[in-house]
Length: 333
Image (cartoon, rainbow, N blue to C red; front, side):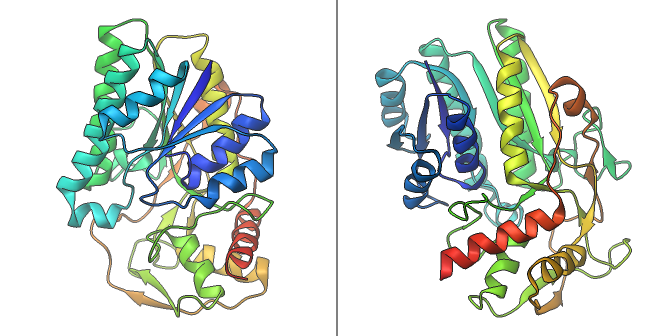
C-alpha cells in the first residue's frame, strides 16, 4: 500500500516526501517538473536514504496518470500538483482553472476507478479572501479575491460534494498560510523556475547576488510599517501537518478542514529584517505599486489543528530565515 504524492518534486511536496519516508510510509511520486527540478528527487533519496517510484506525468494526461494506479496499489493521495502564483493567476485565469480544477477532476476519476478514497488536499488561505478580522478561523466566509484562490475554493466545494455523495471518502482540506524555510540539510528548499513569485526565495536570491533588488509591492497598507502582513510557517512544520492529517483520515470519513499556520503575522519588512539579522546580510529593496488581489493583513487561528490533529508549528521566523539562506547558499555555491 502506497501514498501517491502529486507534485512531489515541488517545494512543499518534496519536504512532505521526506517526512513520509522518515515515518516509514511507502510513497509514489508524480510530477511534471513545471515548477520543480529532477534533482530534487535525488536529494530526497540522499536525505532519507530510501528509494521510491517516480512518474513524470501531468494530471491533465489521464492515460499516463492511470499508469501510476495500474502499476501500484495506491491507498491514499496527498495532492499538491497545481499552479500556485496569485499574480500569475490574474494574468492567466483560464490556464489556472484548467490546470488546477481539470487536473483534480481527472485525479478523482482515477481514485474512484481504483478504489482509493482517502485524500489530503493542498488548499490555501486565499480561499478566505478579505477576512472580517485578521485572525482567520476555519468557519470564516469563503470569498477569494483572485483566480488562484477561486480554483482552490471550487476544488474544496467539489470534494465536499464528493464526500456527501459517497460515504467511503475521507478528505482533509489543509488551508496553508505562507510556507518559507528549507530542510536543515540545505538540499531541499524553495527553488522556483524563473523569477520567484514568493517573498523568501526572492530575498534569498538577492542575498546571493542572483537578483539585484527585492521589489516590495505596496507600502501603504494599514499595518505597522505599511507592508502586507502574513502568517509565515516553516515548510517542515507544514509538511508534518500533512502526516497528522493523513493519520486522522484512517479513522474518519467525510471532510475535515484545517488551517496550517503559526498564528503570528509578520510584515514583508519584518521578514526582511529577520533575514538580515539571522544571516548578517543586508537586503536591498524598493517599493513598488500594490499587486492586484493582495490584502492588508491576515494570519491563522491554528487552534483546530492544534487540538484535533495534535499538530503545532514549532519553528521560529529565525529558523525560517536561516534555513532558507543555507539552502540558497548551497544552491548557488
